[in-house]
Length: 77
Image 1 (cartoon, rainbow, N blue to C red):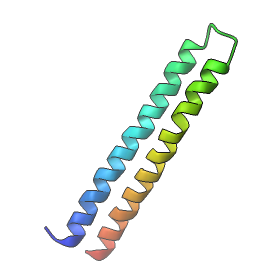
Image 2 (image 1 turned 90 degrees about the horizontal axis):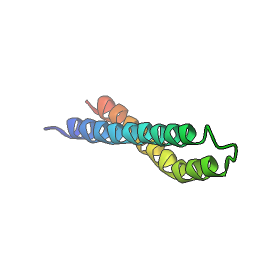
Image 3 (image 1 turned 45 degrees about the vertical axis):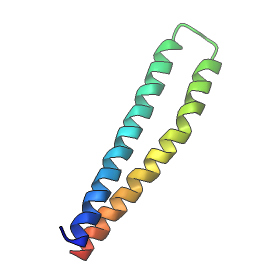
Image 4 (image 1 turned 180 degrees about the horizontal axis):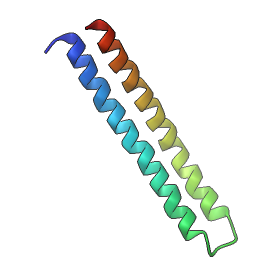
């Protein structure tokens, strides 16, 4: 395995983990939103969103770094 293939493989893994994190964040907010339909008080929904935001941002950054590594590996090859 060459260096560029290794960089592409690591970048792909990071991107997939980031996308899974983003999908998990969306799923958690959808669950919180469906539970909040009968409740007019949005504090529970706001707390759920506040808990998901750091994970969502980390997943976006991880996915971005993975894509950068994939592009870097393609340029190296």
